[in-house]
Image (tube, rainbow, N blue to C red; front, side, top):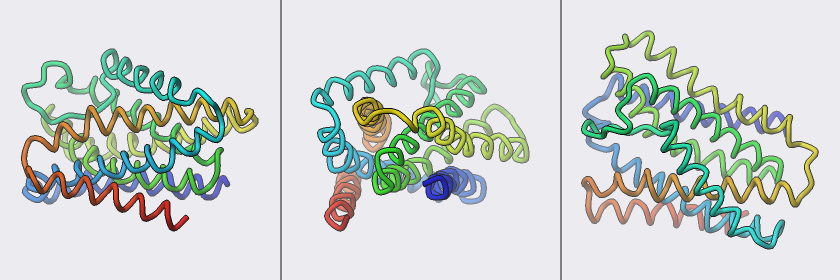
Length: 238
């Protein structure tokens, strides 16, 4: 399991780094298609939530929906107090806080690792699909993070180093989660998975989907649906 855990966390880190590279060397491309990436990531996360996480948690605990709500609220609170996600809205007074937001994104990256770690504790299939969804989600996050670092006048070299460190916080989060929770009961894992599901729903509903309203219009809807349909097809295959 450890080998798969490390491999798929490296994929997730690679998604973040890919986003950084795209912004660094192809700014026009990222500005033109970032919302498309957000829309696809939203569809993937929603697909994972409805087709993977809900069925899995239903088989582990009865009151899974309450723990999903707890997870949703927890990540809302974390965002309010610690600014744990990236935004490129230049007029956002809450999230345009320079290095504080960058630290918050590092925390978010560790949380992503926690989710992947919990997924692998449930089963390799759940872990791999969770990691795939997070990898897609991390591409636009990498774009926005590099943009934020550029906006606070950090050099490309330093920004690259900071971005790579943030990317690999996902692996740290996953390994710590596996070490701490590897001997927990299925009931406790069900609670953790439900809380993780709340995070998936929160990111899709409060972060990814609102960005799709900025442009693309009908195309955004089609791209979100494409992500959902892709996840449905994957679950049917597995």
